[in-house]
Image (tube, rainbow, N blue to C red; front, side, top):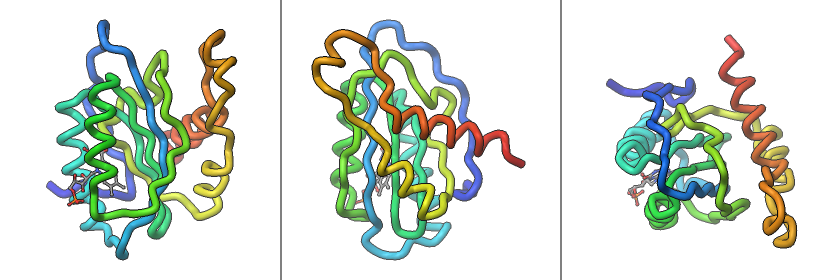
Length: 161
Ligand SMILES: Cc1cc2nc3c(=O)[nH]c(=O)nc-3n(C[C@H](O)[C@H](O)[C@H](O)COP(=O)(O)O)c2cc1C
């Protein structure tokens, strides 16, 4: 069955991780050639299979040829997936916005949710603040404003008809 890339597809909730430290990465990139919905579906099927096996959750936003992806999970698995993503010939110009340990998952129900956005929505997300001073990191758990905005954006997408 082909998945519809325009509407997010929920996955089975993953069991809580008791041992592993969680890590999260956010980046943007651009496809090297125009992707139709079939291309995107194929990418998502491949990504979700690998992500489920590696306890990775997240969301992939796309607007025209531009992507923004957030993925999270056990640190080693996140690095494994990141190598696959960086090695993909389907996209270029990867710009990393966030690469941090996190205390909890933001998208725990999604092996890789997907949504189409407008260019201005993607611009707003990519111009949000995603980083922090290292002194803040040492003293307090921190959710970058960009991640909080992405979470609100995603939850609004889930509640809209
Ligand atoms: C925008 C984008 C997002 C991707 N997300 C994931 C992902 O979440 N998990 C994963 O395992 N691979 C992900 N990949 C890697 C693809 O599944 C990749 O296409 C696959 O490793 C095959 O490599 P190829 O694109 O060079 O043929 C992503 C690739 C792109 C272009």
